[in-house]
Amino acid sequence: MNTNTTNTSVLLAGATGYLGGYIAKELQIRKIETKILVRNLEKTAHLKSEHSTIFQVEVTQAESLKGLFKGVNTVISTVGITRQKDGLTYMQVDYQANKNLLDEAKRAGVRKFIYVSVLNGRLHRNLKMVEAKEAFVDELLQSGLDFTVVRPNGFFSDMKDFLDMAKKGRVYLFGSGEQKFNPIHGQDLAAACIDAIGSVKTEIGIGGPDILTHNEVAQMALLANGKPINIVRFPHAIRKFVLWCFRTFTSSKTYGPIEFFLTFMGDDAIAPRYGCHRLSTFFQQEMDVIQKADK
Ligand SMILES: NC(=O)c1ccc[n+]([C@@H]2O[C@H](COP(=O)([O-])OP(=O)(O)OC[C@H]3O[C@@H](n4cnc5c(N)ncnc54)[C@H](OP(=O)(O)O)[C@@H]3O)[C@@H](O)[C@H]2O)c1
Image (cartoon, rainbow, N blue to C red; front, side, top):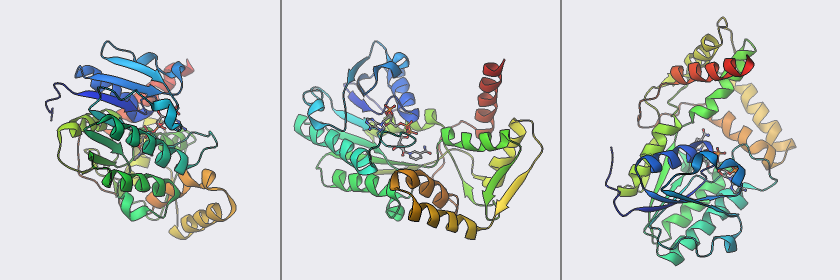
């Protein structure tokens, strides 16, 4: 799909991350004028193009956004805490930073806001990481702006955790390992996010083209590492006990990503299928990068 984006001017926040980087590249390919907001200019070499202007701001501080939205008609935000360890809470980043972007967008008369949350976010509001994202979705619903909430399945970037385990010769799973999901490559998801500019859908659930079991992903990761198939499966009771320990004895900053991961490892997570990138190819490419770096 390739919607008409003539006269579109985008403001992109989150471009220094995995998905945001692919969105910036796709905007560049489609020659869409883009303002890119970053907090760290050292991470921007790959983001520079004749159609983009880069601004250094702190999205968590509303006043640093003033005046930047002039002439913009669409905001795309992938801002959120994944593995950052800045001492900020999900509420300060996933909720408040995005709210700052939304408030400034409203003031400037922006037409549309595209926000990336998580698959089945509404069902998982009890999770720390999701609570803040869905609180922001509530703000979008009440904003009066056109909006699309993109709800992706797991990203290929996160599947590297399987590769890391496989490197050591063993992959750990929970339950039978037959839970199914369809992770998605950043490039495929980026195209869908930009297509959302012209979409009337307020929610887009989206995953990759292949529905895989955890066992299949573990096998792929071991094969890519040239290791024999060695998968250890823990009962779900252990998963739930580990979850309880983290929730009880650590702060939300520590347990947030673990809680999210352990919850999603417990069940099927299947989204409408999209894109053309295969996880097996991604694993092989990642291994090539690792092997080249090791030489
Ligand atoms: N990974 C998954 O499997 C998955 C699945 C579904 C949805 N999602 C969601 O999709 C979104 C994008 O994911 P991703 O993998 O692209 O994440 P990512 O690589 O960690 O990128 C997140 C972006 O948010 C920015 N950010 C984080 N904390 C910030 C702060 N305090 N101030 C300013 N900017 C801040 C980062 O900037 P810096 O580069 O400066 O840190 C980066 O540009 C996230 O909300 C994530 O939760 C992820």
